[in-house]
Length: 73
Image 1 (cartoon, rainbow, N blue to C red):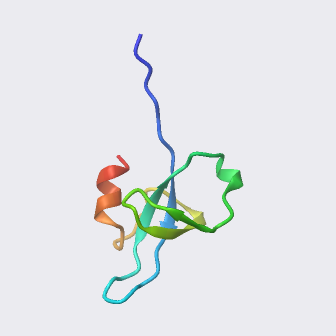
Image 2 (image 1 turned 60 degrees about the vertical axis):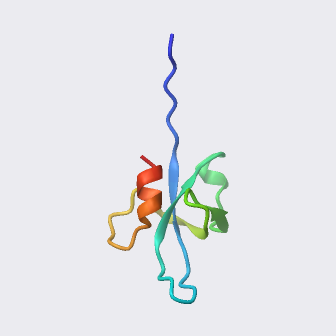
């Protein structure tokens, strides 16, 4: 028997840093979403971003990290 697992993701917003623009990122949830407090978390692509408690992943926006989109499928 093969079990299928589903990974839940939260949306997180990074800050602009130098030549890098603000982007939406995906964060894997390893704990209940109710325990998120809007702090910075490690994103799927490896950057740090502040979790948005009002946005769901995937974010319907243009400024989304392409690496997170590919890895969070």
